[in-house]
Picture 1: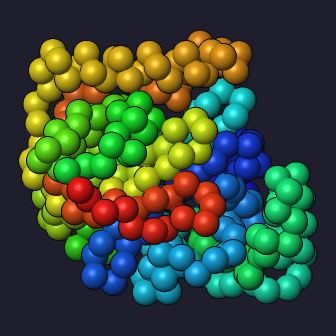
Picture 2 (picture 1 turned 90 degrees about the vertical axis):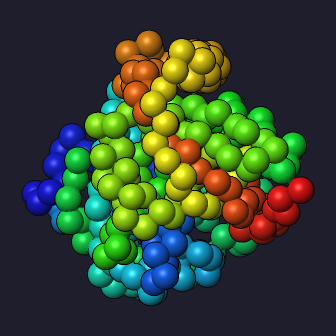
Length: 128
Length: 153
């Protein structure tokens, strides 16, 4: 394992939404909430790209982000410093994220609305 | 004037503070309640210094602040603006923060969350305030109005 170890994994199951902050090229921070930070491997996580929103625009301009994930078992929190690495639009990771998002949308009666455009993979720079 | 519609979420909801340094590296930390001066568009966000160390440094460097507040029912807003100053907390600030915490404790207890988990999540008392002048407010409640700017009255 890399920076992400066993103790962090429950916080990456998406049971509790995560906070995410990015920054524009002009230095304006943007703080929001995302439904899940996905485990990719010991040094990478993925975020879903569903809409072209401010977060996505910022990441195109400046690859750095920070997210805080919560372990639902004890509510402990971990902050991950991230750097955008690449996007995937097909393959196992994309299919897994797409299926889970579709299942969530279906439960909310919004099947087909929240289409996954890409799985955005980030390198984890630090965890605190 | 901060619109009435966002006041309840701002005063009682969970909050997260965001910043970035001059090299555009972002930071964030949890808030522990707020004080709202509605007429002056100023809010004071309560945090712990040990959790907000990077953000305080960023605010002194760039002055730019983002604050996200959401209710348990997922009503959410983002506030963007200018850092004004650090505020040493007085008794009434701690009272506000403890009232905020008590409200959320009740919500979590209604989900049968163990006391220890609630304490892990909400942490201890704040020890400093981040005073911010609000310039823009964005609706971030999931749905058709997400990302739309809310006019400051």
